[in-house]
Image 1: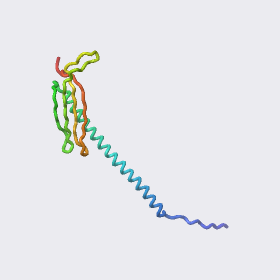
Image 2: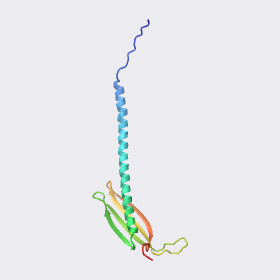
Image 3: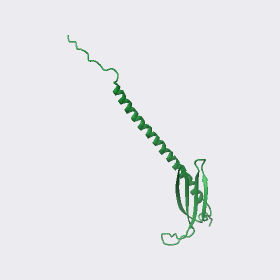
Image 4: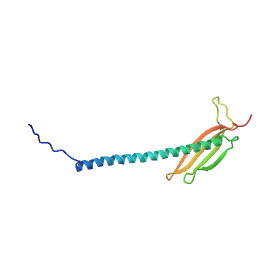
Amino acid sequence: MNFAIPSPRRRGFLLLEMILALAVFGAAATGLTIAMHRMGKVASLAQSELRITRMMQSALDEALSQPMLEEGEVETESGSAGNEVKFLTSVKLIEDMENEDGQLLQDMYHIEVRALWKENGQRQERSVETWRYGRMYQPL
């Protein structure tokens, strides 16, 4: 009969292995936390941009839907406390716009809407513009 002496088994972890495992877990948890924080900031920024874009489109649609366009500037404000947005809508007559054939287009207006607001303590500004025939919505 052959009797072998059993080899001593390791039971449990060594202190060094535990410290190494905690360091790896800590680094992974820190990276995940930073990534989640940045994703939250990006989502908040995207939501703010979408809100401003919708408000600007609404202000532009309102200016375009006027039956009679008149030159000038109109200032309006929108939003709640802490989220105020100022809109400057300007309508200007275009004097020298020509079509492809070189004919002068009369009664054409340039419409611009600028949005001004503060975000994270910094002043932000966006603008959108278009052109419209002045008598577009008048009956013939």
